[in-house]
Image (cartoon, rainbow over all chains, first blue to last red):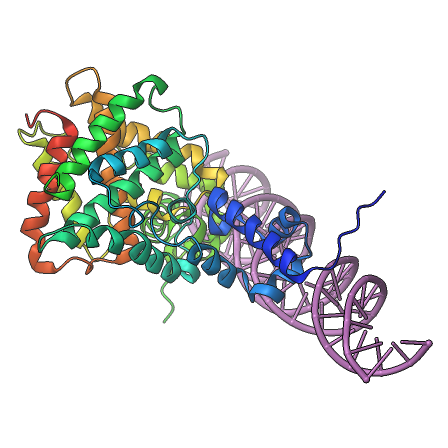
Length: 189
Length: 189
DNA sequence: GAAGTTAGTAGACGCTTGTTTACATGTCAA
DNA sequence: TTGACATGTAAACAAGCGTCTACTAACTTC
């Protein structure tokens, strides 16, 4: 009755990577142990290090393959503030934070071993794409403040949960965030 | 040549508490070990649990004694947005984050054992005092967004360091943050 | 000065962590 | 079929963690 799984290097690697994306997003780097990871991926612990080198390198690969900040470069939005507001609101009310980069940054403490990875991801996945869409000399400053708001809303969600704001007020939240982002990004463009 | 310290319960307790404030702020909950704490306080490890019960309870006491969000209730500021902007800018450029509550929240990962403590502090030290100063029915919403910006700037500082924005641009940063906070809090009041 | 209480110490306890080693088993070429 | 290699497994490793117990030494009280 025991299900036998064919030996498949790529599939196993894939299962581990998927489990890592899920767990690192939900729990952050420190709370995810190799054994929990292995159990979630239904794989042996030693295989994680065989395929990815170390926990740290696996974490780096998880964040790398997430690419840029979602919807930042894909299509040229005519209303960036509203787009960001809806993105943030979506995450504020969501039951679980489903953005690996933002969630992992927020849920991962000050572990020195992964700080450089998070810093690099923060810059290349969020800050730079955002600044690239802003005109003017102080684009970097404005992108930084916007990024702070995005990250901070993740912190709020993590600590206070998805039911902190009344569920019915979602439209008002989007409107308010839109106004704030508009001020933050400069010209409403 | 060995310095002898007189036996002093209160002084020892105080040294431990001071060391805890310093270390938890700089490193977050998880990165601070009991042994590091004891070394910093120049006290024995067992004394920490004797005086505070456990690492968790010490952490709670550290955050509790920090009181409310600084300068939020003390004096009635005529320009709250600018006040918040200067507070955030000060922390953005500071070499080290010196606000225990915000710093500890940012640097502490998703450890379930302290999440409730952080949540409670976030509400009573930041969110509630802020909302209390805002008029209107959606004060809670606006305070939440402002809190997100405050916390998020802490995240930016943690990951990118104090030199991410050019040091000379501090006045521009304050001006920009003031505008954002004004939009965020509603009436510029 | 003796007895009792209390501050401070040293070390071990049990557990968990990431990582590694030694081994078994499936797969495929010759 | 046999050898070689790739894949998967189980167990152990050393190190670190928070906590606790057994003990010493100092101060207080009679």
